[in-house]
Length: 235
Image (cartoon, rainbow, N blue to C red):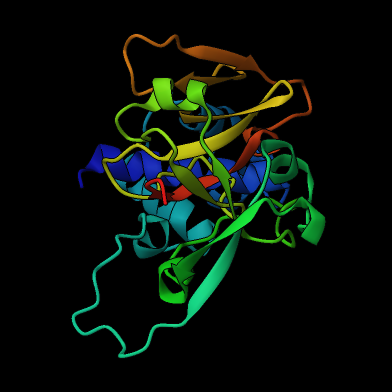
């Protein structure tokens, strides 16, 4: 990780706090002793901070470098002898987008996933989704398969973590795959945010990039249903 990477991780964490309403650019400038325009330029990627400036912003928000670094998951050297199994409900895209708690009647089928595989996932929930049922799955349709081939194969079931609604990178130097509300449908894409729009990028170069304009009071978390944390081949 270099100095530029550290800038970007800090910027994303500050923007996340602003999206959640726990911080404002003006408040951050006052806390760190900067002019408001200086902080605004930093948050909008128009200028960088000095090393001393980074230290001031970190201290103002009671942050450490460890806290803003993406979590790198490591394989356990000796897995437990008996890993509990959890049932993950497979539901329709509309249920995944709109139902906080999954009704029994909305469950199409269930798949079995190790409890440790689910528990190891890092959460960054939006305020709206913090109390929603966390893990569920959808079966990828033909459009998602074409857009994300070969990452998502025909018949694949995609497990979503609905407690990860942030654009902060889950792994350093690796794109994060999200389930995103797009009109009345659900799409699986890599996501970027720029100039008030979500940029939905497929893996296949033959599939078009989609732009999703946000309303004046909307944030990316209003559209991000969750992070794709597991892709299960056809059972």
